[in-house]
Amino acid sequence: MTTNSQENHDDAAALKTDIQRWGHELGFQRIGISDIDLEQAEQRLDEWLSDGHHGTMHYMHRYGTKRSRPQELVPGTLRVISARMDYLPQAQEDALPLLDHDSRAYVSRYALGRDYHKVLRTRLRALARRIEERVENFGYRVFVDSAPVLEKAIAEKAGLGWVGKHTNLIDRDSGSWFFLGELYTDLPLPVDEPEVSHCGTCRACIDVCPTDAIVGPYKLNARRCISYLTIELKESIPVEFREAIGNRIYGCDDCQLFCPWNKFAKPTAEGDFAPRHKLESAQLTELFSWSESTWLSNTEGSAIRRIGYERWLRNVAVALGNAKTTPQVVAALNERRDSDSKIVAEHVLWALARHE
Image (cartoon, rainbow, N blue to C red; front, side, top):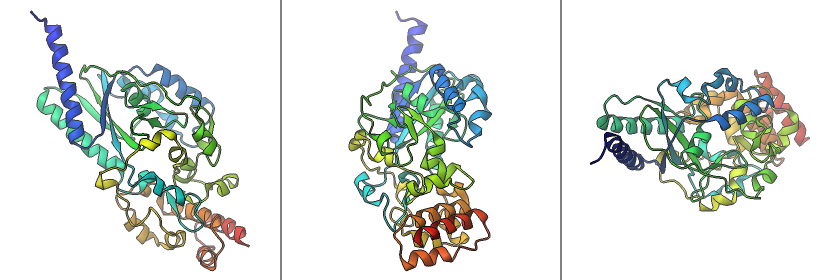
């Protein structure tokens, strides 16, 4: 005769299996379940903040322990359902020739298509609705990189991969080209086994970083990171990093492109992540010529929108400063040397000086 406790355990295990199946049907490649004990991750976060490696991302301080203690952010939370969705739009070999190209732009592969926040949030809400059809009084909240959530630490505990030396999550069978989303829930679901690191002695990501932002294994100084410099930083890009940025106008993928585990990565079949407006290989001069209205139109529904038009021009100006000297490049820069934006004008003058 089974006890009520055993019956509840069996029911929870069956529900977990269904949740993973539903997730796959909704386009997620992996679903894992973790508990809410993030004590070790909290210690690492505190050290990172104490070292000042967050730069101007003051929001990393703002919520205190809510970031590392899910029950403080969403009272009643017992488990986190962590979901992974692959986004690599093309074979990564297609991206390698674009790095430091003398006339074309490099945009981080995650930002070539539709804004991932919207895609994952919609699918996670659909997953929650399926759970609601099965479970009464199901408490949950959806997160997609939009609140104080330690998503990589949670995903590691949920068995979706391990945090590599570059601080991105890696799956041994699929690499690291994927997004993460979470459902905080009050359901007492069985948890998965945490993944362990398989980086070994490899330091490819550390050695290849253009700005030496990976200051040690598993330690990223965001103040040096090209993704931070081109996306998060609202001010002028420090001169010491401009040449190293090369043609990277939005984010940077070098640490992923040269990670040995990404030899297993496969392009996604998710149409929402297909490149738009030929951003996967656009000419820098063309992108610099976009008016604000054209930029707004071409970035509608894109993650690129978050940086605004001014920072877009700032970033492209730096890339043009690193481009091959041609009459077209110099003419494009001269068109904006008297920009009303002090930041844009500053970076244009720097770029022009590189071509004199």
